[in-house]
Image 1 (cartoon, rainbow, N blue to C red):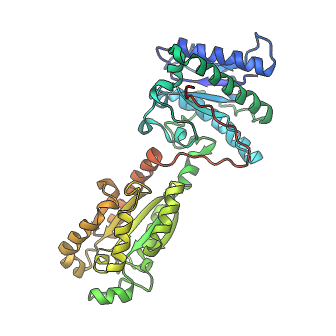
Image 2 (image 1 turned 120 degrees about the vertical axis):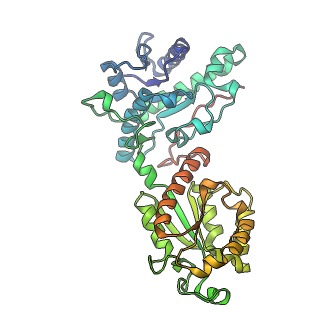
Image 3 (image 1 turned 45 degrees about the horizontal axis):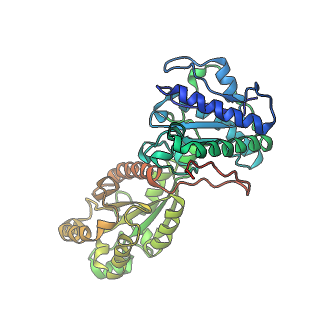
Length: 404
């Protein structure tokens, strides 16, 4: 059996990658008590871009005990690398579903530094150590001053691989009738990301809709028309009568149709929801009535949110401000309301692609909300807190590449 499979983007440094595979194989054989000619690691050094997969490569992917991804900017552009990741991730998922255990057998390592913006969510969602330019694996192998650190790293990684192989008997992979049809996790939404179907990762993206609108009693004190308001802030229905339901209910239905989990809160709960969203990489969507700027208490809550530590990027926040064509009073007062709001909104969602203001119809709202959520989800993938919670108390410490 192969203890590990090395996945990498083919290029000009294949010899160096083969050396890493050979060095790691030596350590694995020693720790596993195997003879020096035992094949313990697999690397397809002969495969070049555009080449069809070999049967031996697929067999290795379907039976290996761990998967090592050598990350580089080119890695996430490679269809073959995404397919290799996909096949192993499917096996990991089946093991987790059967045992409730996260085996931590998919190990992404920095071959060269990769900016977070160029990393796929599949890698971002696996916890790994950050490395500087001179401590990535490639540099550790090339620079003599890292020789001892490289040897220590190999030993630690080999120990993890051998111990995990002894403790986790993950199932063999499925057989594909057409190998070229295997979805690439980096290119297809039907793929598996780190043992979780991509569509389930989208399902797991939670949106907190927070309604910043007056109650009926508050509205009666600041404007002539109050029929669009209710006893709670979340009862606000700005598109009444063309869309009589509360905006929060409408937003939930739109988000749910795109597989988001949703929560709804009134403005007073904004701080609590923001704390949860920051910790869990959720999205906050503020549904704002411009008339809220005439109420000092609620306006103060929004101002405090915009000025809090970590604002405006944590958590990722979207601001949507309806202004119905059918609400003549709001339209008449819009210049003054908008000016006050602009002075308040700077710390909430300063990026234009996360803010939509003056949404005139419920049809426009149905278009703007999904677009903003797509942008917000990409922001979370690119800059959110990277974590993957184990399903039980067992955890294999991931190797780091820091020099001594």
